[in-house]
Image (cartoon, rainbow, N blue to C red; front, top):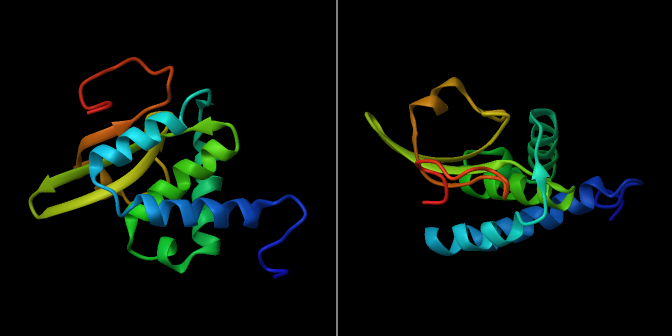
Length: 140
């Protein structure tokens, strides 16, 4: 239990975000988008460093998120950001050659903690911060 509890609640909130993300990851894309759209309300845009810290906290408490499972990792990162009062842009996209799907978060216009090949994915569903202007690909 001491591994879960810490003085500032970092591990506890990261565990909560991971637990919620694991459930969300089983929903269809439209439902995920709707839930995240509600969750982002009232949050300010995340700065890159804030989103990177959330990603690192999530991967520190979850082997699932630290591994190759991008959907729960991206969801948990976005949710943990929201628990801290800010929101990154959550993205899910595909590429055709070679075919692949990926989910990630962005802050300040760039992918957070992702490999360079993330740029090869075309975002299909995004959930930007609530104050972002609608643009192609956002909120699809």
